[in-house]
Amino acid sequence: MESLRTNFEEIKKTRNPEDINNFLIKLSNSPSRDYFNFIEFFISNLEPKILVKIKLNLIFAIGEIGKTTAINQDFMNFLLNTYFTSDRWVRNETIQSIEKISNHSQLSENIINLIENALNEEYAPIRQNALKILLKLEKQPKARNIFHILNSKESELVELGLEVLIKHFPNYTQLFDSLNTSENHIILKSKAIRTLLFFYFRSLFDLESFRDLILNSTWLKDSRAKYLKEIEVYEKILLKVN
Image (cartoon, rainbow, N blue to C red; front, side):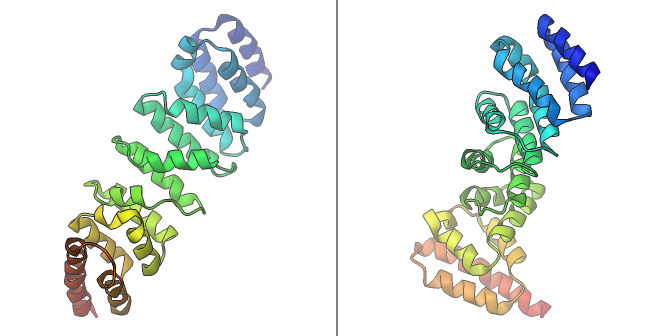
């Protein structure tokens, strides 16, 4: 701690981005809540042109300290603001840091909204890390963007998306309600419906009950037909297995 403090006093004077990055890497290797003062100084006092060159390591350091220590709202706001003004690599590091922080810090509504919206990112690692956070949270997320994930061609993303759905919408009535909200059922392509049925239903009784909910829904005829067709196919598979 003392050597880092001495090093910090020198770096404050030089303001050299390379030196600051090296310092942040050392700090991250042995994270402590005592180092928050260093990070706060960099955020509050460095010129934007220097801050932009160190923010990747700065965000990483916040996440490493946040693994074991609650962080305050100012750091949360920094992560939030940085996400919206950065490239995809920094955005991904921000999501990863939030995942670490979520072990010991309460995530605000704004942060949770950020995580849910990150599921729309084109960069797959961001979506994957956002899903990992939703999988840890107790608060039920909005299902809409998770349904979009199920249409992905990347199996790892689809599996994580299904895990999130099953955790937060564990039975077929909750699943139907989430599909019935804001016309979410329109989002899913046939392959995604097939996958959803496979992961959710092992019982013919539950599958029939789910089928009845769709039959009696106010969905457009084509949408109902698409789901009912996949249910019929899966029903035959279950009958063979049982």
